[in-house]
Length: 616
Image (cartoon, rainbow, N blue to C red; front, side, top):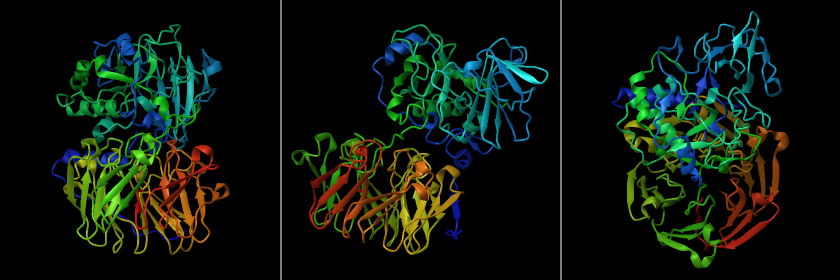
């Protein structure tokens, strides 16, 4: 295998020990729940996808009222025991050597036949004498498989249960349509549990399981099953997603509870079963502070709203979710890239809006920047729209006008030296652009994180690259964070350090030659960037797809462009996939082949003058 660049990582110390612990644990947790080294479902699974920007359902208020607008929440987990059993839904970890046992079911037609690698002495929800749901689970950390049983009773050498389900934690596969699981919604149970380890890390990055007493005779993606005869739209469906309103003040709550509340805002709660109103689920742990958890009773149903998570659906039979990130160049927040150029001669930004059909009669001109500045087409304030930002190479200054403030206020940051290249990506996963520079002379990346208010005290430094490498800022593993990646023109190699592995794991790909230009974008719509190159000498695009495991045998070749064209990564039609887009500097023309039309149709737009820079 080719020798990769030198690897090193450092993060500057901060005064508060708890912050250091949170940063360190969040990194080792791969940005999502991890058990024994196994990811709990892929990073782009709907359970692990942010829903804080999704539209509110029209019947949200009615469903909240049905569950209980004035009812308080309840953490159905904690420390100690209740009625002789642990408080919460337990699971254990096993390895490949664990004996697997046969199981017989009340509903065998909707249960996985097994066998189940759950020890016969595994802990049971409510304890061995429980008359309740009696969930029990084991995670095989060698195979990354979750074995789940509901209403489970151990026998001499087998299990008897109402239902059983086996889930590959590395897969987005859903249950067969209309199948139940150990939850009435037909969903995996374990991914929705709150664990103490996550709270200790400072962040929960998945939806939380909850129950409601009355549900509809209907289910919504990703659920697969219902358990009701009620049909009114005032009743929530199995799989319904709710979130804590952004305006809710969490500061009066204990710090550990605030972690849960932040997750409720960003990832929400998912209706998984019939049960008590607003009961959320977690794993028992002696470290829980029950008094702190009881403060969740102050949280009311009226503080929540139901959202439409189906806008993230790619395939109704897969849990893979379209990641809710606006494409670069999206000034109006509609999920489509605008036609926009920066004119160095006057510092003007010329923008034709997708919401206006890209008509020239509705374009806008902003003045922000000077000759020599590098325009940055990205979102610093997290409102889903591009800000006006330029990087000044001579001084290492960043000038940012925020779209959320109507472009009426601006910020200035000093971050970089002469010769540094700006690398604008979301390295911490908060959907805001971080301040990053790549130093070609040393191969070092210097990053100030938006989640840390761009503080220099908590900036990160990574060594990844050599002189002549081209830094790329994109998401190859689909976890919502940018990778550290470089393309080496001299060898045609891609070197990628994965954020989902805390930048400790890397991949090397041979893809390109000579004067090829790297174009890393999501051309297949799976939420991960593909390996793409544009060959100016032939005007061809060569793309290895992430959805095909970057296989050599399934790459695409497209003829689109001439030697002087500039390839762009843009989503013009808003389908969540990158178009084949080129900008012709000599004429100011844009040539676009649409992914929504399988790249079979194209559009031509005249927008720009010689010397203009397309925003990308």
